[in-house]
Length: 306
Image (tube, rainbow, N blue to C red):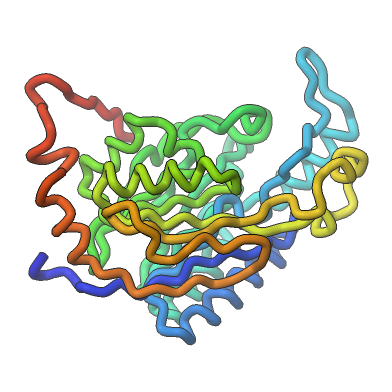
């Protein structure tokens, strides 16, 4: 489109958080932003729950009908290291975004300052250092529900960028067809997918989404090992994990379902690419899921925005 920038210089950060440590994870985030900015990245994307990490393999002592005290102590540590949006950690990231003059997308464990409920949240920051979108995961997956609550606001926020509309769905939210459609209806051309999903089937999913939505899918995952966990009350659970807990697989898919960058496995790496944004609009010639290929007289999506 005429008024949009044709090239998006992107950096996809596949990295390990500092597990259960919001201050150290924030400092690592800032260092990685600076590193990507030095390579002229204009959009820098981090994984799901990068602050303070994804507590893979942990039960927090939950059983049907009961909990235990050790699990509560581990949960309290995670709770204490979840961030309140608008306070110190988000201010530091906002400052780093401004210094880098780049858009930032990052996943965090958010703690509601009033209720205390935790949310699996993705944040967008602008190059001016403003927090421009807060998206809470609609439905935590499986036993994630004992840690994070269902989103009560911030369902489908998007940001208008120099390259077009940018939105995010977190991990298995992308398996919710109507949630995807909600982003498509807003004209998303940069579909940010922060996740902790390193299985091969996921690669098929993100290729399908790129084809379906005629958008770039930015697949951003973590790499971390069991040695990276802090000392916890549930060390027996951690010991059962494989040495590499999450292999990564971060990559970028173009609007035709092709890899712009191949998946990166088993290491930390920043993936750089120049995205040709003309491809988004060229790909709509034969298929525009919410445009000429839609039947609003037959099918209609109702979104309750909060």
